[in-house]
Image (tube, rainbow, N blue to C red; front, side, top):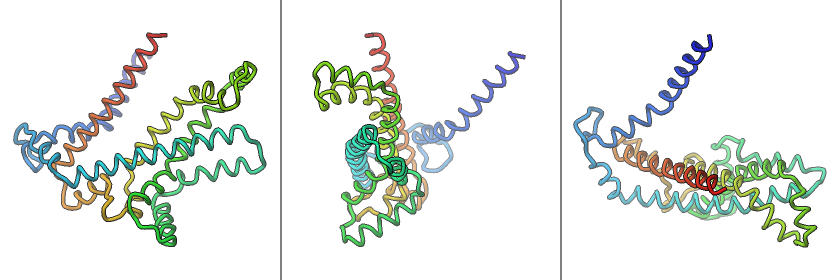
Length: 260
């Protein structure tokens, strides 16, 4: 009976993995296809060469990276400060304020996009990189806030109290005790925020300008004319970067465990 359950569970896991990763494998394989169409005509790096020569894609990639890094940096400052402030404060409307801070993450993106469009139009703010950073920071802050807040809830207040008893000021105790303990939560939230910013299409479509096109919007406009192998090559390179970052993270984690 146990063997049957093990066999079925392994088969189920295998089917789930195939369902999730088979489309990605097909994209990677056909990025090396010499043919522009679906039929396989041999191995080629032609589409990677054309990808790096495509100035529009490269410019959009730079815009997306700058946007994601900027919005993540601002989100870390705002979200961490908000979570720490909430953890140290107690007032009647605290639960209400916490729920309100999560609204940008729960609302449909098209509603947020239209709200940003109306807001910036009323204030007559020129659409471009500034409006993109403001909009992305707004919906990225909750990811930092939730992670840091959950980490702060699980922290033993005795650590900070011990630092204060040893003569540390409140600011020194935060930088020497609290901040190192919540750093993993900040990093995990920042990775989520970075991924959401790089992936966003709907909100960026409403608040972007003529000179600040992002990579998802550029790819979307290219897909209207038909899928080209350049898109496959771009997806493959982004996958390599993601898997490389994950590999480096696990390598550093294993080295840190061995050092302990």
